[in-house]
Every structure is written in structure tokens, then in C-alpha cells.
Length: 187
Length: 187
DNA sequence: TGGCGTAAGTATATGACGTACGCTTACCTC
DNA sequence: GAGGTAAGCGTACGTCATATACTTACGCCA
Figure 1 (cartoon, rainbow over the protein chains, first blue to last red):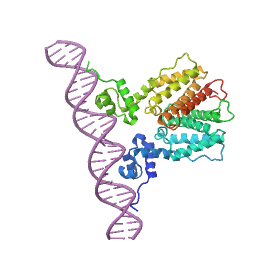
Figure 2 (cartoon, rainbow over the protein chains, first blue to last red):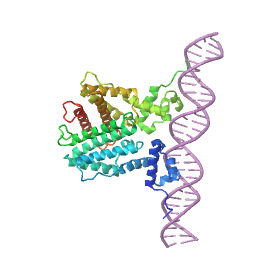
Figure 3 (cartoon, each protein chain N blue to C red):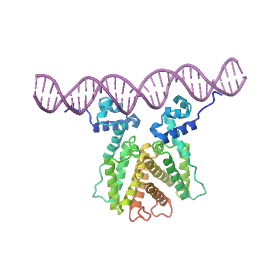
Figure 4 (cartoon, rainbow over the protein chains, first blue to last red):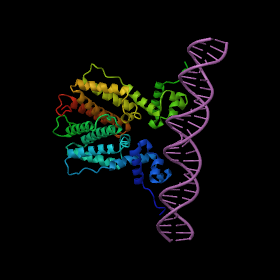
């Protein structure tokens, strides 16, 4: 019952993401997002609780962008694919990405990604505690790298340099987890 | 000549840091900082160019908090001390710290810290290019860890767990740079 | 002694922002 | 159609950063 909806929560989040991508995070105002949807700012409040809720939703939307890696692949490849997907997401949405590091990350999508990483680590032979620890460190390093890159902390460096940096980061992570690595994070 | 100053740029930054520590980054408004100093908001503009300049100053102030490690110490210890100091700074000022990852970090203090790390890495035997690369990865990992911890991304974990995580991070970094480490970031 | 220049702080105003509250609109079900 | 109800709107308020112009309080020079 009631009047038919012109907008929806996903539409609000999509519009907000567009605004952020085009004009930066500061340009994400209730009025700007509403204008893009052809409604008034107050109309958004039927679909998001507050501006903070909208920003949380943006983070969630970002994490939904990349699919989980094929579970048939070996663990190391799954880790690399996930990390690369995260980095690519940061590249597509540099303005929004830093929010990932500031917010609790206890949403459904965040859990989905984390569980995938945990599964890969357990497959690599780590017990629950060590896998949890490794996941924390790995996601911190990857998020930190992606956020730094998105924020332009490496901005004066060419793309190839940053790609090489990231490869090394993946190598170190892999070597650290791999049972064959001599100085691993497994002891 | 002119009227004697009641406030100064350092005083403004100190007041802003207090506000941030006590009530969070969002509470750092020109009015709140000014009120703490007993002046009007506009008086601050004699000492900071804009609110952004004030926030940049906050980051700078944070980096000034810890002294450079004793140059007589071995490189590995210097790295660990710097990383630990950065982490401690994040612990003291969790609200401000995330700014470090969002801002260019091309200020004097940021350069001072970076140059210290670079010197340690060159002492470890890395050439200029590899040292620069290692510095980027190391500072990203350390900043990322400290920021995550400050933002509460590991919040539900006990202090000892986080301390142990950080130790492992330092170990991995050390092993990666050390000439003796088998899978190092030096090749 | 007194005015002048000048830098510090104030007063006031503006426009953008987030959001509370109450109203209108447009659909659904009887 | 009449009523219920959810969606979107109009209006209003308080807060924010900041521009502009004013006032205050000092050192200097006559």
C-alpha cells in the first residue's frame, strides 16, 4: 500500500557513489544526491537513516562490487585475486575507499570478504587462531596500500612502479603464509 | 608592532588536538577550537589559512610528537622503534590519526620520518630504488595497522592480541629487509 | 604627550549543510 | 468512492566555514 516509490536504497547509494566518483567525498551531500535522483533531500530519509548510514551503505556497496573468487582455485591465487579486486575497487572509487579504514567493517559484505580470506588461510594450513591473525594483518596491509594509493600518497609514482610495489606486497604475504616459506608467520 | 597576540599557531593546533582527543574529529570545528582558547572563531584565521590547513597542522603536530630514534642503534631496531612510536601516537590520538592516510604527507615532519626509515633501509644494504620501495610498503603497513587499530577495526580483540599482531608485523618487515632472510624483498 | 601605523581579535553576515516536523500526494484495499 | 498509508515535499532551525569590515591595543616617532 501507499504511494509507489520513485527511489530505493540501492538507487540512493548508486547516486551517492556517482557523486563521490565525479566530485569527491565532500560533494556527497544529501542535496546533491537527491538532486541526481530528481527528488528533495528529505526524500532520502525514507531510505537511509542518516547521512552516516548513507556513507556506511557506500562502503557496503563498494565491497559488493567484486565477486568472491572461484572456490576451485588454489588458496594463494584466491588471496591474490581478492587483494587485486580490492585494489581495483579503490582505483574505481578513490574518494569513497578511505572510509573502509575508518569504519568498523562489521557489515555483511565485509564479513563475506573476510570469511573468504579466512577460508583460504585455513586451506593453507593455518589453525583458526593463526588464520584470524594473518587475516587481520593481510587485510590491513592490502586496505592500507589501496587506501594510500587512492588517496594519492604514492601519486608522483608511475603506474608501473605502483603495480610492482603491489606485486611485492602480494609476494610477501604469500611467502609469509606458505608452508614452504622459511620465515613465515606460522610459527 | 600591532596588538600582542593572545594565541599562536601552535596553541591553535594544541587546542584542536585536545578537542579531537576528547570529542572526536567531527567535534573539531573552528568555533569549538576558538572557544577552548577563549577567542572567536575568526581569530583562528590569523594563524591558520583555513580549516584544511588546521587539519594538516594537526597531522604535522602528531608526527612531531616522537623523537627520531638514536642513530647509533642498528637499523632494524631503529625501524622497530619508529614503527612503535607511530603506533603509540595513533593510540594517543585515535581520532586524528586516520588523517595521516588521507593526506599527501609531504610535510617537513613526514619527510623527516621517511628519511629516517630510508636511511635505515640503506644501512640494511638496499639500494636507493629498493629502499624507496620498501619504505613505501613498510610505512603503508605500519600506518594501516595503526590506523585500523585506532579506528577500532580490531576493537573486540584484547590488547595482548593486538600487541602480538604488531610484533609479527615487525618481524615480517624485518625478515623481508634482512639480508639473511631467505624470501626477502631485496631481489 | 599624542597621534599613527599595524597586527590581533571581533562583529556581522552569507550560503551550504544535516535534519526535525508536519503536510500533500498517489496508490491500495474495501 | 472512501479511507488508510507510505512516499515525497515545504519549511524551518541550528551549525558550520568563511568573507568583509570594524575595533582594539600595542610600538614608534614627533
